[in-house]
Image (tube, rainbow, N blue to C red):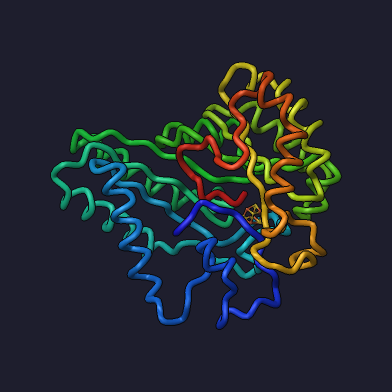
Length: 302
Ligand code: SF4
């Protein structure tokens, strides 16, 4: 990923002629740019410069998902596929090769991504087991995280993934029951189920709030609610706020203009800051508006 920004791209966008905003936001590139090699070069330099002794990998174990969130880039979740057994083996071989060819390596970090990664636990188990054993054998540090909607993250599953070296989950909760179920196309009971799973999590949690015009008011109450969860009070969970913006000059682009548009972002930022000021200066000191506090999984979309 070229950026940790998060946006909704209007459906009718002309991808052959991307707008300036899309290019500036690193969501599209002019046709003459060789994106794959740019991406490799960018990531290599980014991580080589920032973490010369660490390998960071984002592993998408499935494109399947039990949710259908409005803002999800995956789109056709019903047609999503799991990472196959062959690709799991190739991923393991890739990790081994990367570890072996880097004599200065001190740490390996993996983030499991999707789709909903808990829908392919077999791949998570296989890759994690290898990574755990191999880093131990090589005397390296190992850390892993998961981006999940947490619907399937029962206490048992969180305990299991903890034994697999996954010590942090990023989970998005953008509103209460009604908002949550209508924007994610899930039953109303899903919200409480997810909150319960967060509460009983055996691993640390980043609760991610994606803010749009639709939920900007509700988020104030949501923050109060989340703050009162024991897991947040005990500092085993933190809250991270991200704006969802449309990178377009059209104020009606993307779901009837509910997203925070690029052109009005200055005004909107002020509005959001006004809303959340009391929390920012008060008890929710961890919350960041433009920058997620997450030090892993910054590409998260759940
Ligand atoms: S955003 Fe995450 S939870 Fe929602 S549909 Fe996409 S993959 Fe599933």
